[in-house]
Length: 157
Image (cartoon, rainbow, N blue to C red; front, top):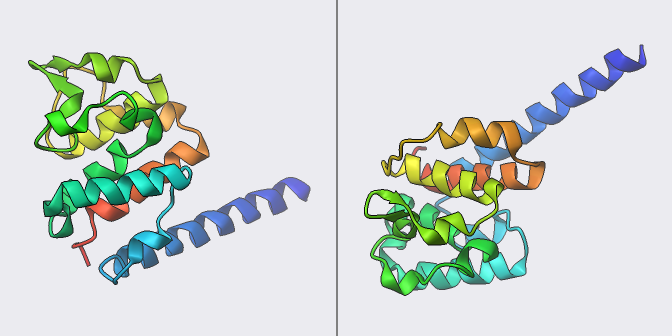
């Protein structure tokens, strides 16, 4: 009976999480909604807000906004000179190959960045990053990807 109860609790938690994600997407155009976003830490939030100011088109373009969210991850931001790039994910690609900046990241962060790049039609000759992420992301990294998805799809509702 304990196994059955545990499974029921997991299903209930998944439903609650999905309801929460749907609510965030529906409310994603509200003023200051970014205060409700999931961040790895306070620095992630600060960097994200700064990048949104630098890439002003993020205000009206969810793709740019979501790319700023990913690039603002402190581990990523530390290795990227974002001011050398036109789009917040351009740092992933260098002459059609994965950049040296990208290669400095831990694999889990590489998968997050690659999944975001793939969503922006930046393609590489690698296994799809989403499938890699699903195999290896911990819950915190998964939450980052979910939040990225919410930002990216904010005009969907």
